[in-house]
Image 1: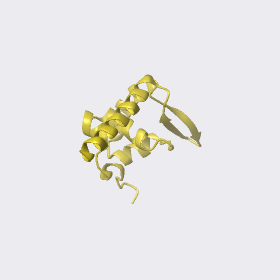
Image 2: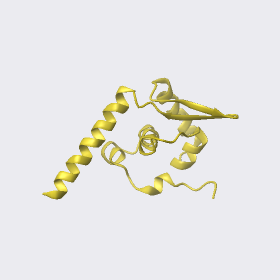
Image 3: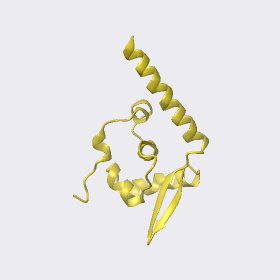
Image 4: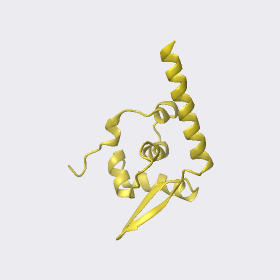
Length: 109
């Protein structure tokens, strides 16, 4: 089904659970959850169950800050990926790793 929302049905990631369900965090989260994939804006809107207007409004800021960047173009479609070298993304990855380790330690106790 073309309009099927898959990403939102996968449950909450640690990032979303800890920091909230804002559109920008959801966009960053889908990239962090799928680090080897690139997405068009249309795919992101569909996967996140977000209107194109909401996605475009929030995506612009992320692109302007260098958090997401163009990875390639296929025909008229522009695909984007997360900028793994951006300081915010590095910090978020470190935070998620630390949270995961802490959860693991707490489960063992």
